[in-house]
Image (cartoon, rainbow, N blue to C red; front, side, top):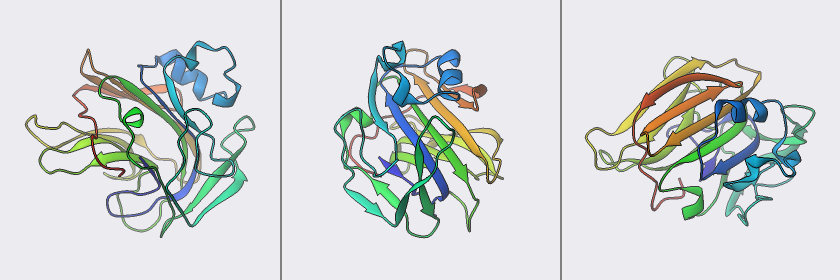
Length: 220
């Protein structure tokens, strides 16, 4: 489970409020997350299934779930957050910044899951920038998930490995990235429907039938 490291380049920009659920959030849930802070959930039903929440205010550790970053390299904390509600954020320099967590089953659900993140891309050199990924690149049997900001052609993209099924990475292209602006992303995988969805700024951007084979080994 890694923040800031793509397949071929580092994230250039900012990341705020990353969270993982072992449940499928709805469109209404995605809309709530795009306007509020997870820290203010209180008794909100969104707490059900929430296994990890990383505020990224002062470090790479979680405040829900006991996840302590194993690697934090060249990340600056304390930058203005995505909204007035989300506290501060983490800055990634596009060259070496990374937050990595050792492999953990709870961060790599075997069935349905949801992940949400605030991300602000500054573009940067090259391609394949990822604010969040948890993957095991076993071509042709890749596992896990990746959010990219600019592949192909500057679009938010939800990649998923389909394990031993035919093919390799299954890509799903969403809307254009708005460089220099905070955008809220929610990826959802429903294992019963075998359906994955990408919400951008509270709107369902794209959905497709696909499987997501869980990353069963790697931290990245």
